[in-house]
Length: 430
Ligand code: S3P
Image (cartoon, rainbow, N blue to C red; front, side):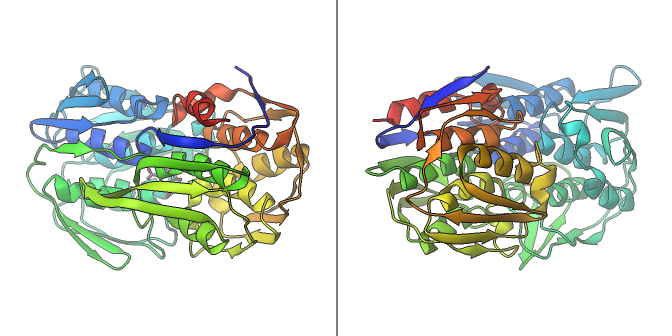
């Protein structure tokens, strides 16, 4: 499906946006291997999370959907045997489903295979496999990518794994495999990646010790079922935060957004650039901080950002590049090599499409140089989303400040993380 958008005058109103994708995946997984009935309130009903639901239904978890909630009866840590010789799971476009799942499957007494769509089948999987092999699982990949064939082990070895990258999916897979290890498992990373797994494991009764960038878990016999509330997704809110900042006259409030300190890099950087952003109603639900965010149109200045902050805003870099095109001066972004292996090569996708719009954006191997100005005028044209949800939404926001009409190809990929994106956008355009 193609989507057509035009320049708007301003954005205003109060909105709620869909729930956090990372937290929803983890809640479905932990509830499915808990012993008993859990409730996941306000889950993200998106293509990616629905893949995780299907995978755990295949393994016998009972998952009922009632409006915005999931009622899950878990099967316990030891998942029932497959009816045939092995389980076959399809993760679609979802990196989080495939990588986190591999940790749980490593501790099972059966064989399984994980496949994915064209994009996921090209993405690197060895980062997650290396520590799981060390723990004693038997895993085969096809040239470093899916399909992943796993023969699990009932007695995984506990490890003390030192990672050279901040990568939450690898960390989570190791911690989940650690639930099945003979002793405690420690994971150390150079910069802290998102910590939703650690926070949620605590809720489910696991003893989690966090010491700087190191996390240690100790296995127990069963996970205790929980009632979890999933906050709005900061990575989805980012599109509206950016839009309100760069469209003159805008004033927007986004309610109930997760403001976990491992996910708030965009807010910090935008404030340093001069953004008028206020956080109110700060509170904690299900061991995650949450707040309302009010954003007003602001004159912004350029900034340099590097690897130190990138893990806290990795998924927001595409929309951040758009903001940088409207900030006075040259913005340099480095340390984002990981973007080359996301749902698309986001560095080349963003640079190529922004050039078509008339912005001055140069792609680097690991980032961007953006020559910005609030007087830069973008011009609408035909753009390609590369079937990447975050690229599609970034281009949609760019088109709101572009002259004339913009057409975005394959725009329905927004359903991966943000069903209803275009409707929410329409509701606040003046
Ligand atoms: C995610 C972690 C991040 C992020 C991805 C979701 C997660 O990737 O980009 O969209 O839910 O753990 P990394 O594994 O590279 O940190």
